[in-house]
Every structure is written in C-alpha cells, then in structure tokens.
Length: 432
Ligand code: HAM
Image 1 (cartoon, rainbow, N blue to C red):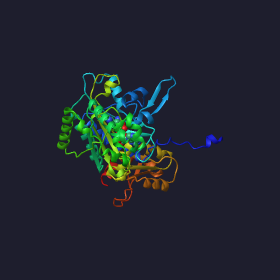
Image 2 (cartoon, rainbow, N blue to C red):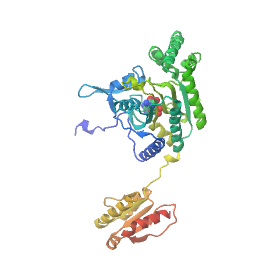
Image 3 (cartoon, rainbow, N blue to C red):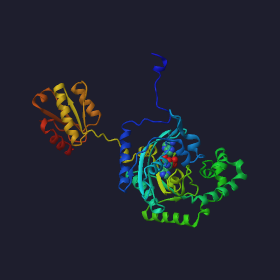
Image 4 (tube, helix red, strand yellow):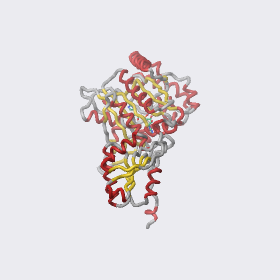
C-alpha cells in the first residue's frame, strides 16, 4: 500500500462531525425552535448551500470581514464564481425575489442549515457552523421586531437556557449613518496612531465597525467619540422607542448598547444581539436586525425585512455547559430484543416491527453472540425491558419479558404469547 493510502483522512479544520449522542440534543434543540416558529406562523424555506458570489458581494458588503477575508469562493467547471453561503439572509431574500414571494405579500420564513466562513477556529467559532434563522418581509413597523425577539426569548425559555442578555441599538436610516460615519471619521483621523491595527485599516473602509473593537486603548479613545443615537432622525427615534415599549410590555429585559453595529452592511434602524456571558469570547448566540434596502439592492422591488440567526454550535455547547435538562443524556431504548437461532431471530424481527409501529424504541441484537453477552449489551445501552426468544420460546411461539430498569423493583421473568407482545410490553413499561 502506498504511503498516501495509509495516511489517515481527517475532516477539514473547523468543520466538525456531530456524533451521537450529541445528535439527539441537536434534534431536540431544532425541534423546540421549530415548534416556537410554526406556533407564530413562520414557514420553513430550504435554500441551496452554494450561490453566485455576486449575491454576497452585493448584500453583505465588499468591505466586511466576511466578504473580504472569509468566504469559500471558487470557480465551477463553467468558470462561474460561486461561494459557499456564509449566512442565510442574502439567499432567503434572493429566493423570495426569484419566486415572486414579495409581490403584494408579506412573508414569515425560517431556515436551518450549515454556513461557511474561513475564520480562525476556536471555541464557538468554526468554519462550518449551523444557523437557525428567521426572516420577516413586508413590515416596516417595530411590532414585527418585538415578535421576532419574543420568538428567540421563547426558544431560550423552552430550552432552559440561562444567563442570556439582550442588547439592542438603532443604526438609523442611510442618511443618519452617512452623517455619523463622517463625524466618527473626523473624530478618529487625528487619533489614528493610537488605534489598534484592525481599526486603523477600517477607518476609511468601514469606520462603524471600529465601535465594536475589543482593544482596550481603542475603546478608551471611543469614549469621547460622537454617539450614533445623537444622529437619529425623529422617525428612527420614535421607531426605536416603540420597540422598547413593546419589549417592556412583553416583559423582555434589554440593554441599549450604542456601540452595537453588527458585521454586515445591510442593516438599518434596529439591530440586536443575545449574549451569553459564561461562554468566553464567542458569546453571541443570536443576532439580527432590520434590513430595508437589501431586497432592492439585489434586484427586487423595495421590500422591508427583519430577521435573526442563531448559532446552533454555541447554543448546544452552552446548554451542555449549563447542564440544562434538555442536555441530559437519557437512553431512549424501551425494549432490547434478545434471541438465539435463526428461527427465533425471525420472530424477534417480527416483534420489533410491531413495537416500532406503536412508537416504541425497540433495538434488535444482531449477529451471533451468547445470551449472556446479549443481556450485557442490553444493560449497557440502558434498555428498560428485555424480550427473550430462546429455542424453547421459539418453538412455543412465546417470548420472555424481563425488566432491566434498575429503578424498578426486581421481578422475575414472565412469559407471554408472541401475539400478545404489544400489550404485554406496553403494560410492563407503564408499570415502571
Ligand atoms: P451573524 O452575526 O454573522 O449574522 O451570525 C449570526 C450568529 O451565527 C452569530 O451570533 C453566531 O451565533 C453564529 N455564528 C456566526 N459565525 C460563526 C462561526 N464562525 N462559528 C460559529 N457560529 C457562528 C448573520 O449571519 C445574519 N444573517 C443574521 C440575520 C438574519 N440578520 C437578519 N436576519
């Protein structure tokens, strides 16, 4: 065998396998989030993972970190420039335009799936990660914003997530941002030498991003900088005030963070982030905001939008660290089927089908092994009940039932007719 063939193949750095039993937690998290969304009239949209590169250039913005440094872009066999989606909002807007979904209509949509960014991997930051996102199209008013923030709040509550803070800010309209950008640049240019390297680079291209620099010296300089809220128009201020009123009415606590600007260019007015303090540097679990120009910017008729995306890796890890009830590993094997000989195995297969049909988790021991080993495996997997078909039972078309659940009072094995197995197992499980 050549050296090449022997070399172990590994997953790409920053792109993780998600293994059982973690997959069960992922499924539970996704199910709860999806129930909350459909409970408020949001419908699922499934979008391709690959899009034309142009889509992201025109939506996220050429000067953002995502577009300038992090996209997985390649030419396909036709020479077209394609990109693995770094987020879902642009694709969702593209699909809505393409299928006429915004024409005289309002839409509440959600999606879930992998996104790709070539970032430096660390805890909570990966190159392939998963987002569950929701987007609402056709509303300019803050009621939809409060609704979507309440959706996230509800999800966190039902997941049992603790310690997550909501921060909100208003970026105002385009004109506000242009005025503020000029004022910020005028303030920072004479102080350029004292800014961190990243902020120096951003000063001309994307000065608003300097506001969320993590560098202490830069933050010190920013303390004397103009504040975005002073530049808001009357309309934007009223909009933001009404959102706050709705949140108070909903009993959702929030902080106003005037330095919250977000890393994508398409936002205007309301932006928000949910932050979990115990999690270290990558503490934003969910983020979003309003984007009223995006649809038009990528070729559709002007349609206001508002949405969020939640990072599922971060959410799942925080739930595990917090030992949330949902993260507890509970074996869900109701029945383990043990048998000896081919005739008995055939009967066991039959009973497995019947039990699975009524919604029980019934695992069949496959392959040849002694009864003792089969019992050991049943025990190790945490099965609650074992069904046993030995040669004797097989000949008599009966089956032995034995309770394995350690919390139950010890009981001797009982024998029932195979035809009665569904009733017998159901009664037995109910008694536990
Ligand atoms: P974003 O802030 O870029 O916004 O990402 C949203 C969330 O995705 C983050 O808060 C984080 O939880 C997760 N996330 C982002 N990058 C990574 C990464 N490299 N590894 C792990 N998790 C990550 C957006 O993507 C917007 N499309 C949100 C939105 C929807 N705005 C309006 N609608």
